[in-house]
Image (tube, rainbow, N blue to C red; front, top):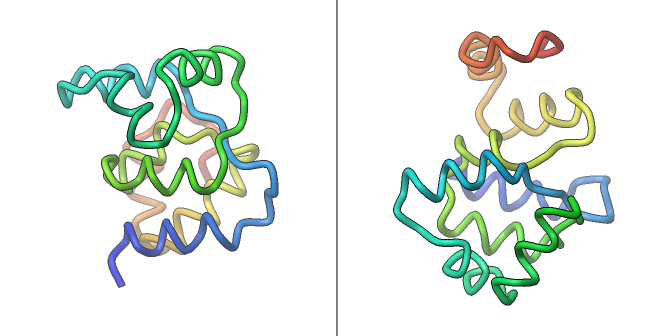
Length: 118
């Protein structure tokens, strides 16, 4: 099973019933890097551009269906920098389930700004 498929599966089995919020600045950087607009993302996940912007600014949770739709255009590795996980333990468990333990150690080495990585 591909890592993206694993990530999609995990959105179904996650204990969080309210969904996930997205990191606004990280999403904007990814959009710029990939020449996409908020409008295109909004259409992909079934929202108006205004509603997407409001959800991002207000840090509202996106539903599992919206996250799944986002993952159709967002690579799984990059999703971990854009999806807000409530705790580092949630992020670690999800990352290991998708990519494996060794990859988590590699990710921590790449993301040194987060001192609670391990």
